[in-house]
Length: 461
View 1 (cartoon, rainbow, N blue to C red):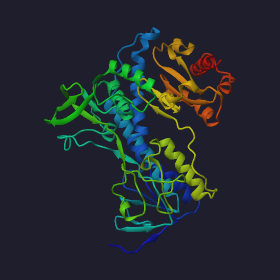
View 2 (cartoon, rainbow, N blue to C red):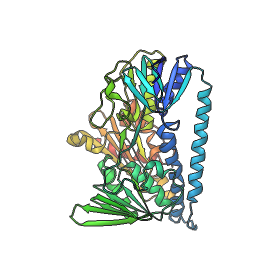
View 3 (cartoon, rainbow, N blue to C red):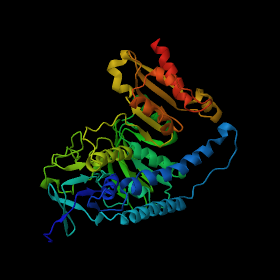
View 4 (cartoon, one colour):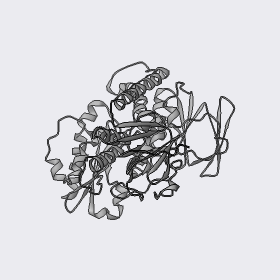
């Protein structure tokens, strides 16, 4: 083995959320190493945000066309050319990745290393035959699908989110195992493209959402898809063309489900198992997430971590926020202060779409007498009536004593876009009166949020 150690000012492991840190450091003149074992761009570009939304949006548009009769438009059944869609996704991702490669090549201070990073000690890392060291290291290795140990599953051509976004063949019957946001987003996309989608669900869909949102989503989603609720997958068989899944259910009845393809979306796990962290002072929790303090520093001085590998928030937008924080404090030299996420928004791009920020109703259940919850339905708004929306609602949680806005949850068309007006209100600790003092365009969808705020105000008088 090569015993020579190459010295850098900064080492970044992972080219997803870590890319911002590495490029900013190189532009500032830091001798920077960027280590990546897979394609450049990380999960978001290659197997997450970008390709998933590219496969979801055509399905959303096709379903919008199918609902055109609600506003008196007669159209034929839309057809998605699935293989061409997947090819377009692959081409687009490759073009973006090539752009990243070119931009990195222009940075004189940055050196790329392809391969898996393994810590030999707190500040020495091995990549293939190379050994690197730096006083500051950022770990941004992300997460990967967590596949359950189900008899018969291993060795079959099951799909995870990675394969589902690059699979050119639309299955006639797709079985989705799981009920989280990845399961409902990809299952929705495949169903909208023409697959008959069935779900294996242990309890209910989207358990982490606001309880009322989750209940309404479950009612709507189970009407649109065949869902085996309360089912526990016990075994998988594959005969070369058909998957056969055997499940137990909460009522003690066994079920057999068959399909042409199976998509396993049972969770993710941090990509830390192969990092050699046992050779360092870095600690991890029981799930494998790197433990960090309020400045994102691990127990190894000078070693930081961000994104899914930390698990504070499993979103690319929070990973970017963490990366920007490290750029300010490690590279730009701003005084180090604890990281304050503020209100963290999220969205689920299924149908119906869901978005939320701040507190959920169950978070304040024991303080129910101290809060008011305003609510407004899409179907009762002027814009919703004009567009023929028949489902969805927004709710705003407000503190009674000072009218402070504590949270907002939305289920319905363009929920993720609508939510953005609430983020600065929560960030600035605005009150209900601050919100209602704004002028809303009429008739526009954001009036749904104003109406929810008005409803909350009636409870405070």
